[in-house]
View 1 (cartoon, one colour):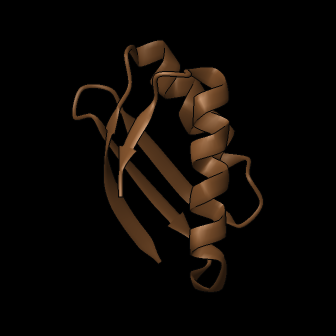
View 2 (cartoon, one colour):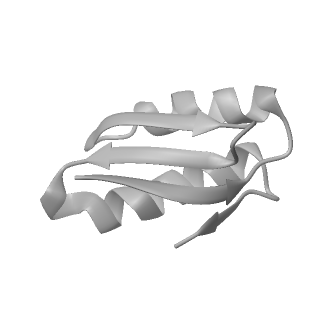
View 3 (cartoon, one colour):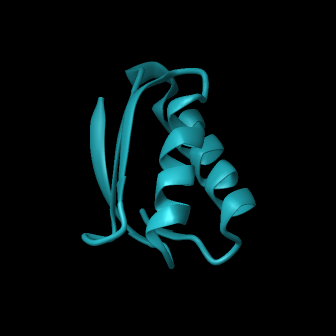
Length: 71
């Protein structure tokens, strides 16, 4: 399953770090974080999507505490 989310990230460097962190999570097929568009595309296994999304948000907040996602 692939879903697109509106996010709030403060800099391009943080967006790149978040993208790499999310891509390395178990269950993630692919991830893309765009600072310019303020969007995150997450592709993960259907059965674990909600769990993977929670892990992705947690990982993003470790990198940038101000990270916000619209669910």
